[in-house]
Image (cartoon, rainbow, N blue to C red):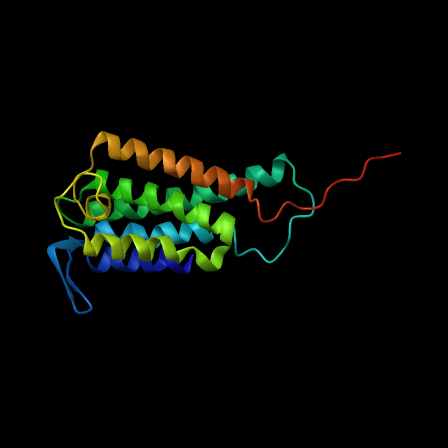
Length: 186
């Protein structure tokens, strides 16, 4: 929840803000803050289940349902933060924010499921770095276009939704924590 809290603070403080520099690197064109905020929310989705200190003893439908509900709740809260930004700011590209949120949430959730919550931030950092070093308008599928472009095509939204569904399904299944196998009764 602290990551979602930071996303809310950035959304409320800079609804129309733009990022012109990232350290020594100049961003051209400038990046809207609210297009980048889904990077934080994707990390929140990725770690939403991986921080529980209690191991799952037996895997059953209830455990999977609770995990799915937790991921869904975090994703819905994240989308609510994006909608808050659209109310506070002007001309927020909701489709681009949804693309970024779905795409990176799926990837971060999958990384959290396979490698652990400690590594969830890596896809967001790699996506940001790749987007900063690629040319701006080269292709609809270039890292810059998939992260920073303020418009999203239907194809991009479909790909982002598929990545989110696959990543969240993997996270709900949680292959790193299978629980204990039940013994057969004699």
